[in-house]
Amino acid sequence: MCGICGIIHQHPEQQVDSAVIKRMCDVISHRGPDDDGFHIHQNVGLGMRRLSIIDLVTGAQPIYNEDKSLSIVFNGEIYNYRDLRRELESKGHVFQTNADTEVIVHAYEEYGTECPAKLNGMFGFAIWDQHKNRAFLARDRIGIKPLYYYVDNNRLVFGSELKSILQIPDIPRSVEPKALDTFLTFEYIPSPFSIFKNIFKLPPGHWLLYQNGQAKIQQYWSFNYETTNQSEDDFSNELCSILEDAVKIRLMSDVPLGAFLSGGLDSSTIVAMMTRNSSERVKSFSIGFDESTYNELPFARTIASHFHTEHYEEIIKPDITELAERILRQLDEPFGDFSVFPTLLVSEMARKYVTVVLSGDGGDELLGGYETYLAQRIAQQYSRLPSFLRKWAIEPVVSALPPTEKKKGLINKAKRFTEGSRLPDHLQHVRWMIFLQQAEKELLYSNSFASSLNGYNSHGFIEEQFLNVASNDPLDQQEYVDIKTYLVDNILVKVDRMSMAASLETRVPLLDHRFVEFAARLPSSMRIRGKQTKYILKKAMQDILPQSILDRGKEGFSIPIKNWMKYELKPLMTDALSEKNVREKGFFSPHYVQRLIKEHLTNRENHSHRLWALMVFHLWYDYYMKS
Image (cartoon, rainbow, N blue to C red; front, side, top):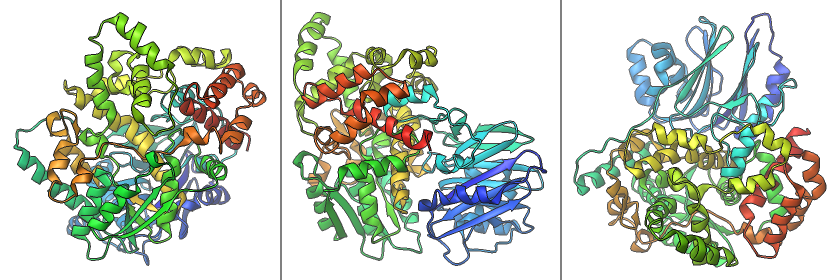
């Protein structure tokens, strides 16, 4: 696992400054604390930081082909590299290392721009092709590993994180209004946007070819929903077979390895599969909270005991303010998902014992695990109630109820449901993933910021994905949208940035592309049946996991931030969102921000999502726009 970066100037006489490449690498040293490596020649500069996982002796990068006309820097893991190596050796390719990185170089040599489709893994890589005078960049199918790029009239600049690109002094730093608006709406910034104008994310399943000063981007993989007629038992057996192999190949490592364990269905399934395929006792890692409704440690202990793992756990009692500031410095663009807190803390705990962990991320998007899918079904029934009953009786009563300090609870769920149900029907389940509606934006946004949006539709990227899915089944449509948006730009960003901040590699077996394609063949009734989510996974694991785990509802990896913002985080919030600070930056109405703070502190409303997003942006702005 590594961090990569580079500069490719269009003209050979434009020399790359080695000191700049060095700075680009140093700022992402957390991604690879073990080593660095450079290829700098005339107008080409490639850099990398290495976290040594496979081939500890000869796997240093950059790696070259036989005549050194191709050079690569690579972030990720290729799980089928041994099979692919044998295939390439049979075609005459000669290998100098035992690293998975070298397989990519020879695959490019053999298959050209089709090489990413040959790889089973997570990756972001860049190859400089000296003979063809071009750079070839690619990102894995699902978007597990990040890759940012900037192109102007003279050069291509790229990096695993925005931090690297920002080391170049003349890269313009200007906030992209559309990205900020979308962030405040959804708490993340969707591909291909970044928070900066003219710096972009390479979308998942795409490659970029830079030649003659032009960048061409093309998709090389996606998936379709094509239901197959099989029995429940056949689906169940196939699920176990594919997932077991996906876990098995991800146990490949020359360093210690473990698993994140929340006690939920997905992480419990991964631990079960690891136990069946590992000759060593599995190490598992969990964290909890003093607040009982947020604490999942009893469920994690159940699995740890059931599978006899070497289990480690901690109750979170950090310095919340210090932790919040540390997380915000690590994130180089605004990100609002609260679960960055526990993700960083469990990563730091795991890193004391292992270098690699397996995670259960992806199961909710593939197998119908989110409550939003059920909420959409309930909403269809709710909409049949008389309009006057909904608008003049139910919704006013629910809105008037004060929020509770519980993680969820009936009142909090009811308030969230009625809030989302007022949004347009065509957004389907996404209505409950929106945290700032248009009426609130009209009160919050300053005139200058609102004008800069020029009528931009922050839901547009969601609507586009609904149009892209080739299925009439609502659950297919909803899952497709989540895989293409929320999964890649929220969940996987969180896991990558927070685990890499701890120099920990995280592998996600449920996002093996073979399992993604299998899930897309499942009838929706195999994913959700009645009110039971992840139906086929529960059936497949019914004789393997304890019944208490199979019967659990979806909880989510969250924190009591709405309570912290009233107490521990209050000084940071009131300072970051002071009237003076908000007015100086000029994006928002100081008066409305103060109203949100007052309503939250007096428990009239739970504005934790809105206030945290505003805090994140203002603190990010001070750190990245002024430095």
